[in-house]
Image (tube, rainbow, N blue to C red):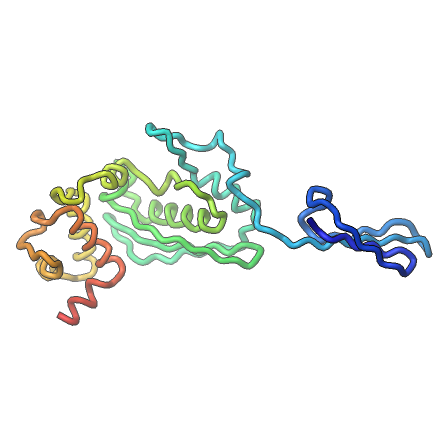
Length: 235
């Protein structure tokens, strides 16, 4: 509900109107002329739209399990409706085999949302892995837009067959080849010897292939957020 104020010949009269009777923006309407004017001012508390209700469901991708994925193109369409005024990309890492980036999106209402993502052979399918930076940027942009629009589904760009398979793998099973390549690539990029990284865990191993998938996932997280370097310095 909202309050509607009417000013007629010096008198103010207030009445309650239903939300559906007015626009979501404050408006002033002047009717008549001279001493018989009527000024109506409607002040409405602006509420965030539920952008999930405005998703074009024909644009969604349905997975074999029946889940829904929203493409970046549809997120960009909704973002334009909300009002994107600027977009900034920060590249954290870039090589032919691996890239990581953060994209910051500013909307016309002053809100700022950012998303970060990486891309490489460990989480990109087929020849798309050759374009690690564009893939990382697209994923980061999709996340930033999802956060800004409060979209409840995952974006198409954020998943791949490799990430889906990895998500349902046995954590206590042997390290996956994609995770092994990821650890080696990050260590090489940061100039960290793999032997030192393998000595940081609660269960020390001599070679990377002796890690479990759960241990490999924890190492990747520690390498990406800087925790591994801090542990190596204090060791």
